[in-house]
Length: 83
Image 1 (cartoon, rainbow, N blue to C red):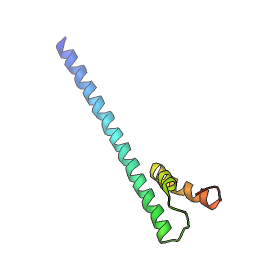
Image 2: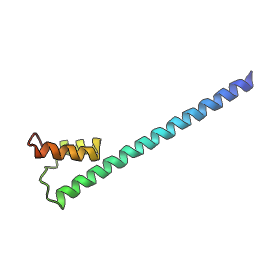
Image 3: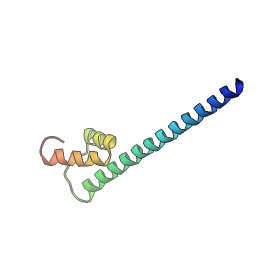
Image 4: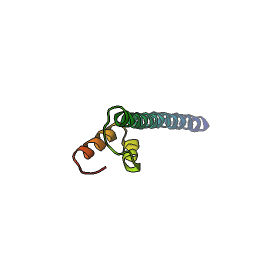
């Protein structure tokens, strides 16, 4: 009986480690996407003279959504809906 408990415990530990590994991969993807979005937003504003105001709201959208956030902020700005 104790061998069965040990095997089940080992399998549960492996499953938990696998889930943690996958969540860390997803979190690292989100962090890289956010950093790339902020860099792209800064480069567009600095070197390509895009006149989107850099404020806490636009940086927040870009930091949360990453590269799609940059596109969203640019579209909203050029349509005259905000920012």
